[in-house]
Image (cartoon, rainbow, N blue to C red; front, side, top):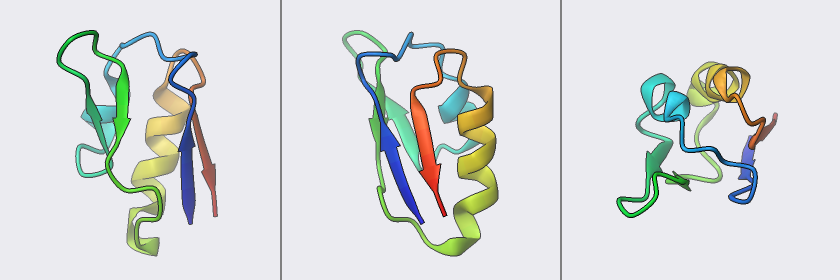
Length: 64
């Protein structure tokens, strides 16, 4: 699996962090998403997909 983020699309809603705090964080200064692991183990696929689905800005792409 590979996760990609588009920081320019991010609206700092934080839904990704709520869904998968082991994969995503937010920058302190503006709340923009920070990808913690671009190639997580297969066991994280469901959480990554949930985070992508919850993102109001569609800033997360998950490639399984």
